[in-house]
Length: 311
Image (cartoon, rainbow, N blue to C red; front, side):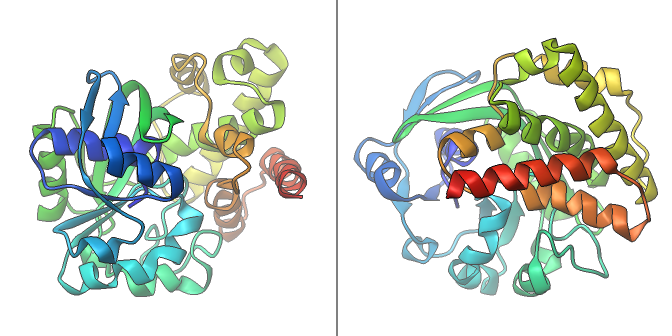
């Protein structure tokens, strides 16, 4: 559900492995997929795949698993489309940036899931959490370019290596990628957040891709400060990451001229994933009384930028 750069790529390589795959898309992208399939250039090769495509999941019927590759702020809007699949017990796999709506067992992250609407609609027992490390963009309607080694990490919200987690990981493995299946996904969530909280908003503010940002000493220092504050929030929430700031920055630097998803959304005139990424970290910092002045400043600046871009 959401055949953009990430979702479209996943749909294509799963279909190439012989799985029965359908995608939900919109507008010209949907028309192109219906007409000539998904066309992919990637580290897994260049190929095209025909898949079922619709503007609403209910038109495609129910599936054994639904991979939610819409942005985090769009999940609430698609909940009605998920009802039939939820009713038949389908596995629901949210693949969003930021703090996932299922993160806490006993409370709602309002920045991600206002009033807990998603938590109420999607049974926790049917969810497989996911963290995605890959980059991509839609070149033209129906054509997707993926860059970087695709890295998918799956885990249960309940901190156990469940059968559903293993089944999804096996599905990806059989399709030619090497996913990880873990009991507790939270360390992987925070590891990715180190990059998302820092690189994404700063790239939107500076209009720069990753390599030029990190080559600028002043911006590199800002990125490091944002990562340090994120590490403090993670530690307060009970997650200790065994990685240094320099190691995490050097890992990001390998992405070279990649545009972050937030910069792509800004250039495309779309809403930014600011709340699930930065707003949610601020919300958790408040829960544990962690001071994060740099993150709060970046949030305010990016929020203002988003208002201007929408206006």
